[in-house]
Picture 1 (cartoon, rainbow, N blue to C red):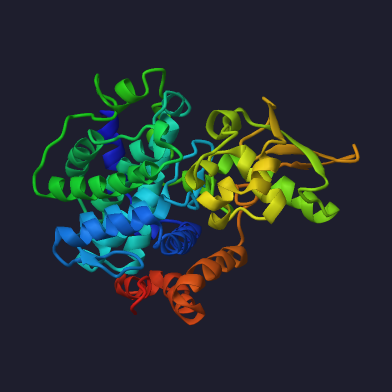
Picture 2 (cartoon, helix red, strand yellow):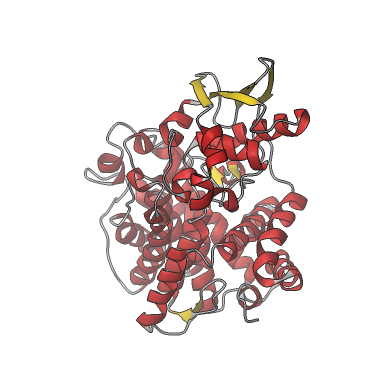
Length: 447
């Protein structure tokens, strides 16, 4: 059986009642996280521009845009919400592929579930299945695809959105295979745009295109026999250096890649998170300041230099992909929230001065969430720490309490504490809701 049909069969055969309880719980946790970071991003200039564009399109009022409450078509709502979910780089990350699975999948699910009145439990199951597919497609081309310069969140994310929407629409295996063809030919996103407004377009388009592909397939649109494994398919063209066919479906429904997904404590590239943990720890333990630190040396996984080596970022979004800036902000502010990645912070003379004292050395044996940090003080003495697993990584996951604190801080700042509590309660209760309207109601400012 062609790889695409094999995957389609596995999805169609999956029933919500067969999903483990922890999967539903994790699906809710990802929704708590993604709505928090999306609402927090509502006033970002590109979000304002994209929302204004969506409003001007005048599409049918069938799905809700987060925060603004704009009502528009499901595909446009998925596009805007997918963008908001990722613009701060505060969403989740799958290890080791560095895919962001939630941003391309939840926006597609929320828009479609609201449009068709799907039960909350079905929406959670659809997300879990879609995220699993996105992760498995990612692992099937890891590391070759990313190393070639593709942004895996956009390319693999569209398959996750197709799977989630297709499962929610109860597509047949043949229809799902066609939907993968319609969506898969639109898989795209290159890493050159990291550090700009364009990066978040990748999950935005993945969510919207994936949802549209599933809807078109339900109406009879056709695709190729095997968009993933065909002679000129996804594997052959977008991962020419190699692929792992077994990663796509082996143990589907029993082994969950979702368990390798981590929620972020910092609003920047995930491979810098361990060094931020380490710098903040040493800062707090030893009273370190910009005045008494002569140098910061970090021993890191190779991806840190591949993804995050920007010694002189020019704008806030570039700072999110500068390990030097992440370390400097961690020392000066003791934090790594979106406030540490504004244009003003990147050009702040104090942080710029500390940034110049940060250096890195590759430690090939280190994992992505591991680091050794050595800080040299101005008197010549040194302090150091070792972080085996960064906060938020699968081996050191963010607790519900920490997640709720993140949610309350981000949503409370925008909507107020009482509103934030209502939305949080609605999310935790989603599996018992007759539809997603209660969540949709509270994820906007006017409720």
